[in-house]
Length: 271
Image 1: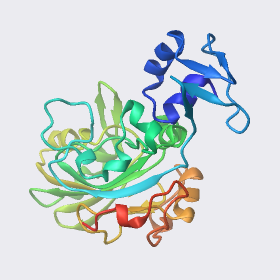
Image 2: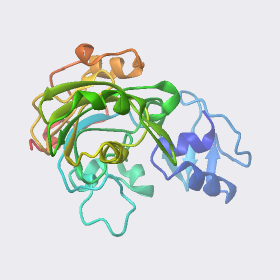
Image 3: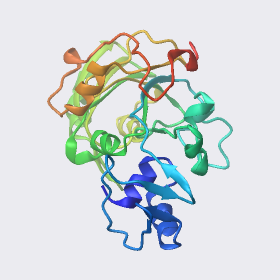
C-alpha cells in the first residue's frame, strides 16, 4: 500500500493529512526520508518511522454496537452533544499521535442519523469499510420502520420505485410488512435520512427507524448501547458480502474473543 495509506491505517491521521506530513519530511522508510507520495510500503519488511517513532499497523478490529437514539455518528461535529464515540472504550478512540502509544483509532462504517437506532459497525479496516458502504458493491442494510398509520398495500409500487434525491435515487430493494404499522425494509443505496422523505411523499409520518441488519450480520437481541467484537465467521461473511445475501442468511454469531492487539472483552461495556 502507499505510504499515506499505511500511516492513515496506523491511526496517525487522515490520509490527506498524512500526505502533508510526508511532504514536510516527518516520515522515513528504512532510514531514508520519504519524498514520493507514491512510495509503496511492504508492511512485513519495511521499517516506517514517524517523527522518530516506529509505526506498525494494528491488528484489525471489528465491533458491533446497538446504537441508542440521540447519538451522532461523527467525531468532528463541534455542535454534537453526544456521539457514538463517547460510548466506546477510550483505548479505541485514539487521535493522531496517540496511535503510537498502543491505542487504536476505529471509525464507524457509514452513518446512522441521530434519530435512528440499531446496528452500527466500527473498524480500523478502511478498505473493508469502503466495500461495505460504496454503492457499487450493493451491500444491503435492513431496517424496521414504524409508521403513524397502517400501511396500505397500494403504495408498494411507489416505495419500490423510490424517489430522486440530490445524492441519487433512494429505493427499497425489498420490503415485508411485520404488523399494520411496521415494515421491514432492505436498502442497497441511499442515505438512511432519506427513508423519512420517501414515506412522507406517500403521506406517512415515520415514528421510528431501527437498523436490524448490515450485509450478512443481524443485530439479534443485543441490548441498546451494548457492543461486542465480531466473530471470525462474521468478519469473513462481511468480506464475502454481496448484494445477493438475504436477511435469512445473516450470521448470528456469539461474542468473539479479543483480537490479537491486546484488547479483551472486559474493555467493552455490557450495555
